[in-house]
Image (cartoon, rainbow, N blue to C red; front, side):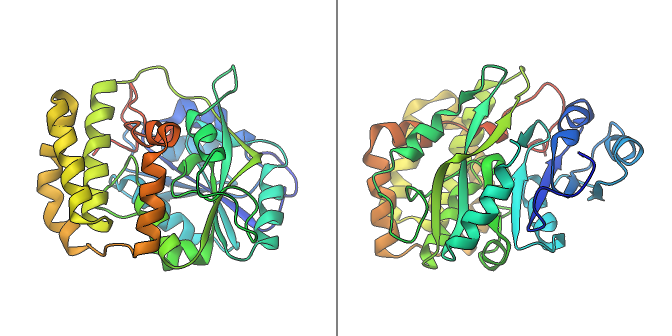
Length: 310
């Protein structure tokens, strides 16, 4: 981590990892705020490597793979009012977290600040950023940007207390698209989620990707999220569309079946207003295309075992 005083005393960076030491070696020095690293049962010596090379990093060895739920432990461990998430191959631009803290200070209803994510050496904006910027929900007077009902975990800064009160990420989805259920729950509590283009995160994704696997995992998790929070007709449409796609879509539905009892126990459909907002997003082509991506940039398949691998 960059030596010296943190960029802001109000933000902690929470990173989850699994068997990704080569990426951490490059990304950890770029962080300008305290880092809590959650290790999801790495088998490549990642915790020892981090201890030796970056003794200032707070490493938590979880012993097994908790997926996205590992972030909850990091947020609980943080003592700052705000928490920024990062992947083991992503980081925040200089000044970004200081700006995010100031924006959150000035907008007390804001629970999630969704930042612009620049991908790769070319610094291409993640497609979801354009979709969020064009959100049909508009910009509410007390929020700093367009309202959204989804975000990229590796490009978000959350209000710690609001995140924990909403239960954080859950074990039903595990990893990939875990942001949707949390976004719906925060909105149901009357809290705001907004896209802020001026706050920037950077992401250098690994080159190896199993697109079929990503699609199957994405279909699984969208269906389970719908079971937990959406009306039954929406669940039925999700399931039917995925089955008719065949291939990864059908595999995703089949993979959702073992988790259905847990999803049903967690079922709490959102209210009419939040569901109406979600349906509006579903009808917009640009946002619809983005929301149908198998997984956000922070949850892709990798050559090595990752935080997404059970």
